Length: 359
Image 1 (cartoon, rainbow, N blue to C red):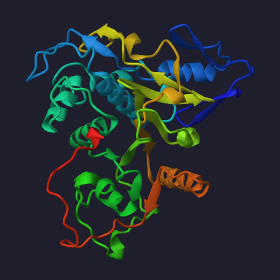
Image 2: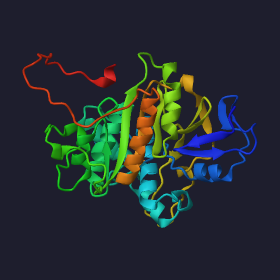
Image 3: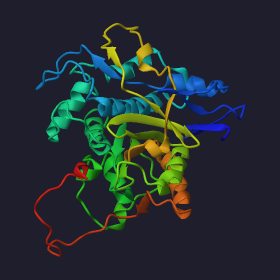
Image 4: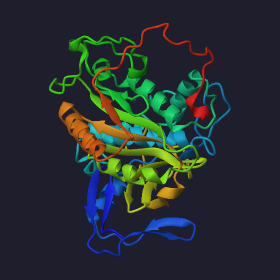
């Protein structure tokens, strides 16, 4: 066992080497943790769980997401934690339960007017042919979040989803700068190989970036063990915002690890819907109280890594960290300066569409 825990790209040293994650019956808990900074940061994380008694989701009869909304709540946790860092700054953990933090939680209130509510996520999913109440994959929730953030936070934050883990750096231009097309990266079909379109690492960004990288790490529902080290190394990158994933049929938000135990926030408890119209509404159920973990060998192979870069300097740091991993054999990510241009008519592909979630 190591004497450190990694959480959201930060290392927390433990004073005693017998402090480690252990399994106690059916509950996965942390042994006595002697690092106050870790406990303060962990207890300040944003947790979203199943809720009961909210207003009916349009086009459905649902007033609770119990049993089907875990990936939607996991997506909310990733976005909520990103917004906490984005809007409250690097010392976000000292500002939870302030008026500013409550304003962030209101984005996720369980009512149809809230911009990142279970209602808005469900309805956006239905526009992608996923009916309300259907379980979503990490890929699908990533695209839904990308679309909602584009609608609601375009001035200061965008989501970029690389193609199968490959960054075509020139595609960042349409996401980051006001004078370019604001369409999201997956819809940017302006493939121009002019030098002016190359990504400039020194150009000041107009908005911040949440990078979400959906991947499948085996042909089965368990992660191929050749990727175990890669997962841990990616979680050490300072810009890490964790992993959307879980175990088969259950979604979790992974925020850290120790050795082969991955720490997660669990949406699978049911709480009553909170009325956030009160200026000092109770926030206790929006923070984790129990530290849970899962062995890396039990994690589902379908997942999505996330990284938050506030500005061009943080992206350069992320890029250099990832490139160092690539040079040492990590093959989950790659970077290309320009997206290739394929002339039409060279290949005759079948007309039938397929869905990545079917694999």
